[in-house]
Length: 159
Image (cartoon, rainbow, N blue to C red; front, side, top):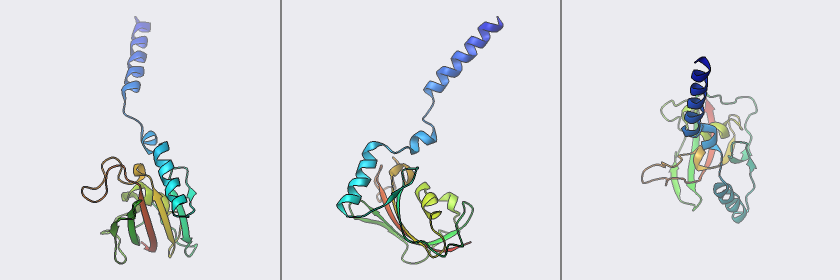
């Protein structure tokens, strides 16, 4: 009887594991289509970028002061412009903003990863796959679902 219960429990675990939603690491893994689209954009615009293990591509334009780095719980003040690969501007700060005192951990994953690659005063361009931006949801009327987002960021200050 004890063996039967163990077999039933093991079977249920296997079935539940097979039926479960993808893990967050699977969702963040970049598919070949997105990877190719980012590489094609870089090639067509004669730009170079480094690929992070997350799938984020980035280019550090100004590294910053090399002393003050942002952490997940920091409140970064940035100047930014967001573009689609079509060149359409879909957001801009028009000056420094801290998004109403938002901590870095509450920004999109692409910014969380990218802003940690520079220090205060630094400037970076991020080529963010949709899984690290707004995913399959997008931002209604502004950023379409599954859109690659290009962000130009300047890390003005950190609190």
